Structure formats: C-alpha cells, structure tokens
Image (spheres, rainbow, N blue to C red):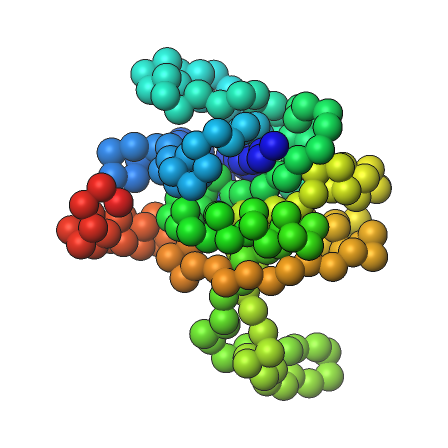
Length: 229
C-alpha cells in the first residue's frame, strides 16, 4: 500500500497574509490543490493524510465542500514542530506494511515522475529522498573563519521523502531532537541509510511572497508551453 502524509501544519506567517500559504490562490486554485493533483496523477490510488494546524481545519472543509474531488482520507492536527506533525500523520495511517511519502504541501510543482522515482527507490532499499545540485557558491562560517565548500559534493534536499512505513514508525518513536530537520534525519538517527534520487529543479517550496510571485510566473509559462500541465 502506498501512503502520503501531506504536511501543511504552518499558518504562513512569513507570507504576511491573512490566508495560510497552502491555501493562497495559485492560478485560480489553492496551492495545496496543485500539490494534491500532482500526487494523484502519479499514483491515483494513493491514501492521503493531511496534517493541518488546528485553526485551519474549517478552512479546509470549506474548500473541499466546493471541490469534493480534493477530499483526502484523513485530516489530523499538526504539532509543535514538523517532527510532531509527521508523527501525528503516521498515527492516522492504517496498521500494516506499506510505503509512505512525506511531502510539503507548499511544493506544488513536483513532477509525477519524481514522485514515482522516489517510491520505486524506497521500495528497493527502504528509504529515498529527491535531491538537486546546489547552484550557488556556499561558504561555511564559524566564529574564527569562513571558507568555501565544494558545491560539487553538495545537494539540496527536497520532498517527497519516501520510507518503509513500519520502519519509519519505529524511527518516529524517538524523542524529538533539534537535529531532526527533515524525515531523512529522523530515519538516519536510527543507523539507517537513504537512497538519493534525481529531484526536480521546478519543485520549489513556497514560503515567502517572492516565492509566490515566482510560482505564478512559472505556472503561466508552464500553461503556455504544456497544455493540461
């Protein structure tokens, strides 16, 4: 069985908007609808759990009442940190074997092929995450000095991150630590490894007003060049 935990636990304060970023309009539809559509194109039978801040449940219900095709299998309340939100999402999944992806709801342009690659790789080795090359020059900074890093050895990590469900449940039974910046870090804390798969440069995360402008421009270009995209 294939599962998705769609993480949308934030309230979007960095967007400086009264509407949470996952519900902001993008091409006439909420951002989160674009994200869901990508996953359903990739895996039509996917079981989806949505993690939302408690203040946003009513907004979601209102959106789904107008677009019932966007309903998900379960909606749960997020936690204090992303770690706790994912743990809550895991608790809402049925018992038994399977493969679960965790994806940021505000990454609406992930390619269906990227989603399929991540699930396929995880099913082979247990865990897979999408990565892309780092384009910028990066420097390491500490109190004494700063120095450039070799960007040829660096990769930027994206979502969806896909794992064996039973093993991820065990990993998330651990106590929260500040070093748990994503699901792969929780997984690796148990001594496990992850497979890196080719990510998608279009798979941007919308967190600021500037990101939303870029997303609108990209959506316009995509619509002009690829009907039905």
